[in-house]
Length: 486
Image (cartoon, rainbow, N blue to C red; front, side, top):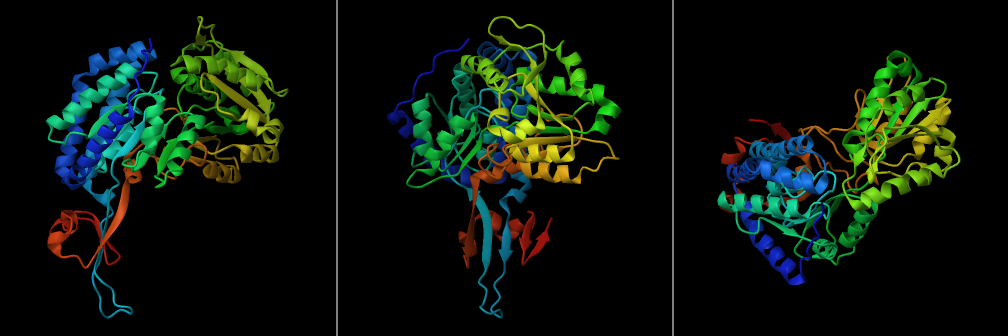
């Protein structure tokens, strides 16, 4: 059930932006313990309201209680992870060069750190109504960096957006954060105005290529352009060798079907194009598992309408055939489908065959030689992930080199759906997967919302606390080129 969104007026947006700008210096100045306590307070509040929030989310997204409860746990886990990132301190990249008059030219004292950029706009995603939404990873990392956030609600879950925003904003204020720390705007026009507002200093987005590109252009076209960190589209290529099929074909086929149908195929890391050796029989194995795969309702009316159109677009290519379909779906729901083409067609018509189709579909691509495989892989656009299933006897160095160029995360076991929220995660890739080199998941997502500042020959009492020698003694930093870890 979708509730119509209201539209935030220009005057209301101006007031929210002014409040965020007033809160920004307080967030920047807050010490690590204080800022971490604010993040944990937000997490605690979401956990306390999990029953209420999951019920609203299930009504609006039809994702089911089990999935949604797990997603709330991921969301609060992200907030708590970023609390530890703030306390650990290495994200600040503290760097000191002591003055040295003996050098030519003489070197002044330089003390460098990263600081928050200021108010950040975050655009919610449809497919993760908690983890990539109002209190999701973009918001958590922006707050951790010391920035207030204004979120553009997604039209697919407006009531959930409003309630989540109210809970988190109240929790932040109750924990001592300033008013204006988190706010919500609604409506497409308000979203466009938000990314262009002169008080907004950066934006994070997860969504379609078309919508993201439009906002990216607005952010870049401002009189004062701002960074726009967009996750836009990804086909997530998979390469399977003949030796891998021979060794574990059934397990691979079962894993593929489970992955491309997970969440009714609405994960940004869904394996959308799978390169398989011709004449290895892998498509028959996939067909066997796909026949029993269930589909289901999609997130929004717009996605529901787009899915069959996307299938028709692929099937219109003369090289494409249907390998298998899943269990029949009820009216308005999506039925899983496996399609087949060949590597030569992909290399010749990538604009048709490699266009992302959101929903439970995957495209198998037969290759008969290394040359065919390489030519087709070169046509694959930048992706969030790439997966290589091979055996120790395979010579796959050249394939791995291409996949590493094409994606931000390269897998050698398992399937790409599911993204661990960790210090080392990279959830981003070359265009059109993302608009930047940064990750939107994991500890280093905080780097998007920070900028460097250096203080030259500053009196100690005017330095930020963390750049003073007393504080540096307990923080990771580099001094005169030497890394020091307490």
